[in-house]
Each structure stands twice: as structure tokens, then as C-alpha cells.
Image (cartoon, rainbow, N blue to C red; front, side, top):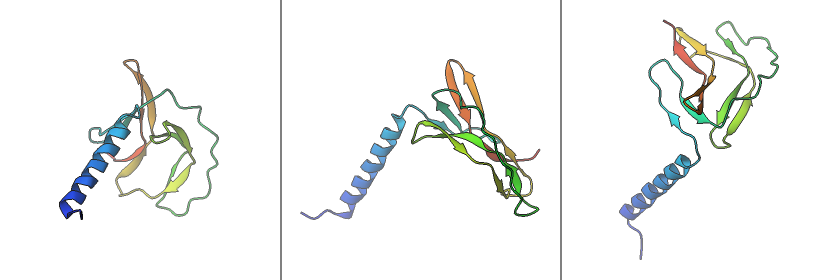
Length: 119
């Protein structure tokens, strides 16, 4: 018996649903935050101490240095070090907001770094 296109769509939908349920069971979540804020992720604990970072020469006048930082890797369920880098802001009014960790109501949260519009 050949599968119809409807059967294929249902199979893909079930696969997507199974992946979503699997990710939800990893023990952390990503929630969209309000305007001007990065995503909040529930994590296992605080990040390790910040590592030394070497600032290299800027590739051009429009670039901003983003210092190295610990970021949460959802798949690995652990913090990973992101080396410092030069990055061009997405628009002229943008500035980098560094990520931050907080302990709130008995849970550990990490707010990812992100570009934000200046006020």
C-alpha cells in the first residue's frame, strides 16, 4: 500500500510533536521575554568563573567587542564558553546586553546576551 501525501504530512507532524515533547523533558526551557530582554533559560546552577579573554584588533570602525562569556547549551544541558569576538551591530541604535545569571524562587536562571535598541 502506497502512502498518500496526507499520510506523509501526518507522519511529519507526529515527528515534530515527538521532538517537541522530547525537548520539553530535558529539564530546562526557553521562554520568550518581553521587549528589550533576552530569552530566559532555567539552568542547573551558576556558570563557572569568567575566563581570561584576549582582545584582538578590531576588523573595522563599525564593530563592537563582545567579551567572552558562559552561555547555556540546551542540548548539552551545561554551560559552554563563548570566546570574545568582534561583531557588527544589527542596526545603528543597537548595543550589546551581556548575559546574566540569577537565583530566584529556588531556581537558577540564565538570561542570554543579546542586541537591544538604545533608549
